[in-house]
Length: 409
Image (cartoon, rainbow, N blue to C red; front, side, top):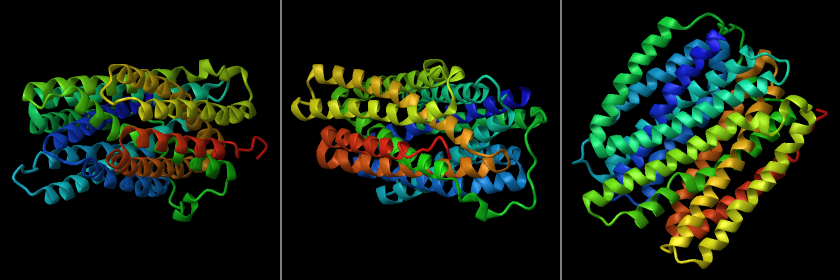
């Protein structure tokens, strides 16, 4: 339990900085005149780095231990924050984009080292009886997302209050202190690694792991296609009058909405075992539920697409409908995400959990990369109707792949 608490605390600290940094970068560079596609580029290397990192991090953790990858993730995030403080406003836009892409790539490596370490630790530390694994992974994942939501609000508030440089330097200092404390206080309990681990073991031979990873690609692609660029820029256009005061007010409101969305998403994730009555249901029923909840999710962006198509984007009723619809999307998405997070650990064997989890989160990062690229592109080409329509199609694919999971495998 003490090792689980320490891992969770480290993950919380990281995700607070990760959420704040995403909002800082998005809003700061939008005010500098970056287009939706250029804003999406800023996060591309972040997601590519996540794919590469997750593919290799499972092997690194199996070889050198989960503690090493967790500390490395926190340390690299400190370096990324310090690097962003060196950005010069006088640089050309092309150079600024390239620099921030590289730094965001470093942050992406950091995030997925920390995520893979934390999620794998749950498999090894959680009790197996009475749905203990589902409860522990739901608490870790749900609380992480609630903390990340606070990070979105923190990032918007810091940008309005102390500016971009002050925000990233302050976060770097706090995270460095937390890293030192975690290194000094980490209790025993995490595996130390094994010298014979081979990189080729990363690729799973389990059909269920592979189908679940495919479903994860499209689930998170469907979220990020509107979450990364489209919705924040839409709300900025609706809320800001172009003045500095209007920008600050828009920053707070956008940050608040994104924070509330993530916090509610995290709360539903943490409650998912109770919502699904997981303790009283066999694993085979939970496998079947993955497809049913993906199908339920499909109808939310589909209906929002119709509303966006027929309504003026500045209409108050449409903005209210959009907010309510996206909150509903978040609740159903949270059930899907929590089910996936449980199933990947249930499908994994203890001796190769870091590799299966790494492979699965590589797929997660791949979906986020696709969603990030499409978020800027679809918003620039077709506005919200195209953004939301693309999300609908991606959820449908996720449901198809979730339907291929086999309870008898």
